[in-house]
Image (cartoon, rainbow, N blue to C red; front, side, top):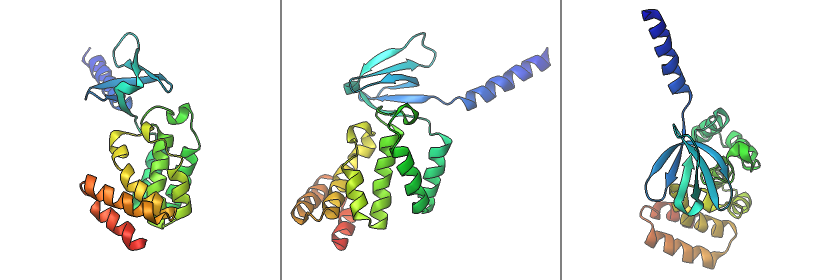
Length: 194
């Protein structure tokens, strides 16, 4: 009897570590662990862990979804974080092209839009202005988390730099420096390059 209990306990322990849940992050601060059922531009259907059925949320109630990162995403991020930008760019480009259910698109927090946001960082580091501007113009900022959206004013500056729109660059630089704490070093770097 004791052996059966031990086997059952180990099985349950392994199952709990192997089945991490996604988290729906609501604008009111609420967090609902569970699974994405479906998504469109107006609504997100979500099945909460342990709930018998799903719940539908207006997109206006949802900040983003914290999806568990698949192995391919973790590998791309490892390349990015180690400075292997060539490999990271290739991986992010591949993911960004997959605006479908496999990347959780169009859910806020989806990997396709997040890949485009990470491409901005790669192109900025490589000073690849044409590609930076091209990706910047495609990003669906509303489909990123609040933390990612907060960086948009800095990328507005970088996009103006990439587009060689100097008047807009100066205006956006002044706005970002004034309105964003911590933006000054990034804006200073952009001005040094300009």
